[in-house]
Length: 205
Image (tube, rainbow, N blue to C red):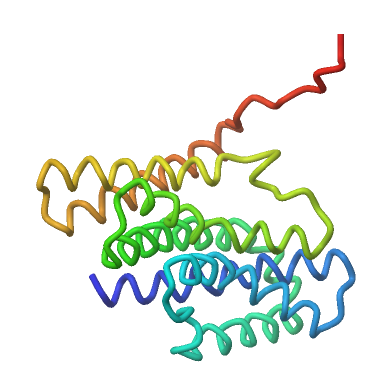
């Protein structure tokens, strides 16, 4: 389990970084700008979580996230056509990373002694806040607020985690159930173009 989680976490981090770098390229940022956008996409959510929990941000104790983003930038520059070609593959890694980061955020919060409702919020923040920061930096309305089921998948995965916990399932079943829920909801939402209803201008008649 630890090896699988480590691999998925690395691929998820890499996919998040690629996502930020691709958007930066679309906005014609320079290489440094692309690196910054890629980095905050990959580590932004976990950083906010750790600051709110009062612990040292995770990337400050392990340089792999900095190195991973640098590798993503290099590959994006050299193999930009291939990255575009394999967009669906990066989407899958992004979804797997989203699920894993959601669970990691919840577990870290619970370990710190906070209640489940806080853990669900922190899990969601871990998964999606980096993308929000990315969109703000590139001057776009955050994607999760206007288009896709993303944060909702994290929240549902968090509720499944809590339900399985209260049913006294072992930790492996809890993690797999929560992980599967996030991935399934995300994939089905994209496949069938499911999104939440939009708010409309209240001045409209």
